[in-house]
Image 1 (cartoon, rainbow, N blue to C red):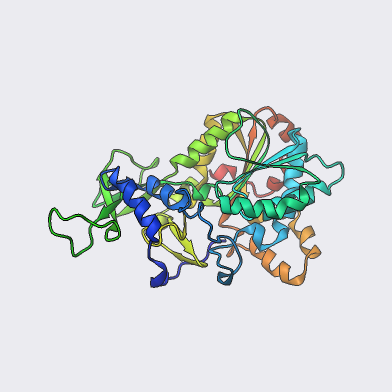
Image 2: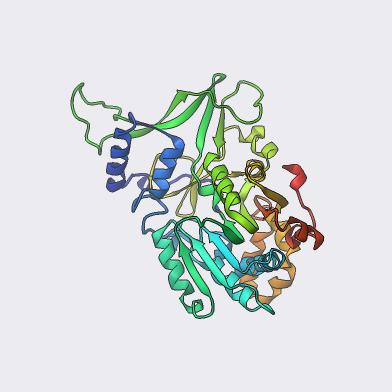
Length: 399
């Protein structure tokens, strides 16, 4: 769960020297300008330096543990235990025995899913595969799941398989994929990128600029790209193009021969995404359980994220052969999957945390759940009455 927006402390804004040196080398090869998706990729995934590639803590409940934000699996085991009911049904309807999880976080979701699924009568799960880019998080996952490795084949993968027969789970994965930015200023569209510029007290002409002295600044360049829907008016507007997320869904669709995909993230349908209230975009940063809108500070030390355009995700999936079989809010999805029955089985303190998963003013409405299915089993799912998480309040029509 991402915190509400509050100012970032000034002492947390500095870019670490190693990251500054790395960015200086990157900018030197690109005429001192990067489109935002390339900058975001460096900030999050530069080897050993990016936010998801360094050894700093990331996920946790409190700033005191060094974390920056909490996700649903860390908030309460009720999330994973309820989600497991949908995963179990999907394994059976799609006739597969493997789960692939993308972006495994601390391993909390995998631990709960595996434990719950193995305890079900006639357990179907035989293999669990995690794709994790962060070496620090991968190590935490391996430590956490070590006790379960005697009961189940648990693996870590770094590359796509040629074919995929599985139930795929992605919780808060799409929001961390780099995006391009388009900005309309004074009625004109341009691509917004990041430039490396001298400080305000620029050095004399011809004098070398120490890589520790430069600054990062927004910089727009002319572009023919425009949003997929008409944006009325001439007021300033920022559009986030989820090019990499759509490509990822397309690659997944091409490989998924049997099974389905469950995507859980915060975001909107197209109509909501381009609502006038969001005319300056959804890009946010998270550090120490605080939020800000300045991705050019503390590069590598904080998370960069954008809300998901679920309409674009659905269209990309359908264009590559997957069927859209469900889309609803996280709150409705969890209730459909038996949240009310699971809740009383945990302590009162955990119940308080778990209720944040479904409350509309917390995670229940902002987060959405989408299920995409390989066409080989669409008929079987529909004949069984559909996936249980979408039996009520399905919003596919809103996309």
